[in-house]
Image (spheres, rainbow, N blue to C red):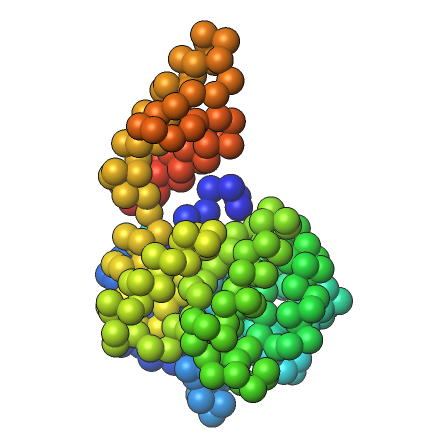
Length: 294
């Protein structure tokens, strides 16, 4: 499953806003995150949980993957998991995960709910969110803590709050880069941008951040406004020029191997095993995106 996931854009949708849910399927996002956490006032969360099954069905009608972001306090997390684990929900965003033990505790609740729903244990995928200084130092173990983990992300606003930083590209750079390493070592997807998702009105700056984040290894990002979705889809997809060059690299390198040569030059640059493998990975991602988007 994790090898086939394409989550270039993941749009947060407040689960308590029927008008937002009704339009979510038309936004073009690869995934929709029905939010029970920050965007939902405490007094409206019970109603949001009660309407979650209908919201998941409606939001997913165009084929986007549906996830739910639950709450951190355990009493709320229990109620959120009971409401969110269902066949129409592919996975859960888990905020403020502190350790591998914390995640596995939630996993016990999830598997119990899967069985009650007639779902195979392990069906519900997980995306832990690193949002505290303590979790930063346990990022590796959190990423590896469950076979359900398919991605990991840094919650920039909460992480900056916990560490006393101003959330911007400069302050969040180290945490973001460490997250890419932790994700790759665990064999899961690094999600996010090097910066914060809060400032969505400056689309030029957002595009630049997404472009840089893709360069540093991120494969997609959540966002809080639909205007950002097309931008993320574009920046986290290989461009036509990149695809064409990758095809040339693979072709000439295959010929070189057939001729018994291990490294060649193409357009003044060396092509050897890592370069060829990188080109093959880019083409494989391009094929998965093309299959997903038709």
